[in-house]
Length: 418
Image (spheres, rainbow, N blue to C red):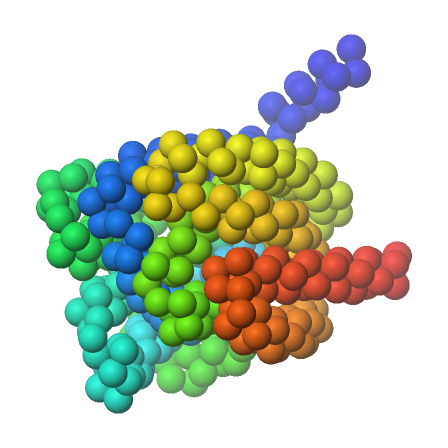
């Protein structure tokens, strides 16, 4: 009888309905995020081989830095601000416009930086077109303001548009990637998919939701950048051990080692996206109802634990099923990184979805900076001596430190607030 009443209460509660719908749509999105890459993965592994796989991973690691800069933490700060002001159409239009103008300016500067790096670094010049095509993913992401849909808690459009983008990319891979020399098309096809969904999303925002795209207001844009500065640093610094490890591996171990690491990390990355369903769904909700944090904590930890154990146990089967025999050493990488998923969950639970929401961005920034610098330091010897295994250990150990310190700090804040 008690549980029937609880279920009836939840089904009649408007916020609970929205939360469930958002969770359902994002779950569908992440299922699509699993299925589409799994369809192309065996094909790309067979056609491209380890070395071309490594080249793509190397270029992606470089562009990841620029992508983090262009995002500038808006995925969280803008989502939070939209969620709080979603009933005020004028305020939403102002936030939307300021963030879009800020990201467009940063994107232009980021491309100029990449262009200069291509000219002065021989290794970058060798893969210049791969880098440029990989960078093209960023304009597509800028056009697709996921943070706006999340803040408005309208996940349906995120789901539909992303599935469209993934479908376009998946079909295109089989049509255009026929031999190793076609590897350069992989990031370009991904970018086209994002562009398509980005253009459609802008039409929905302007036509359906009647959100206005205002003229640039320099003073307001500067305030927007300042307001997201701490979160941006918090997002940027993990690249010192994350993407940097792949970059360093590319210089020390070459394309083969990078390809092995990327194969082992593939399913970890896909799993991260799945666990982010819970995080992304709850972020705008917790921005208004922080007392529900314990419910989110239990759900996130349960989902992540099941995924981490499954990946660790099934690593040999997964690698042998989706890759060719030359990728066999990726099993070790996958098992090491599977453990790190639990610590990433702690960082999301107590960092992104608690400290940021509660306005403790600066303390979170300081923890992230200190831990990332440690990861940056241990990456050099570990990767130099142990290659792709050293890269996996670097990322796992640093994520462990980050997750533990963020959790301890957040729990201390909670006790003080009580």
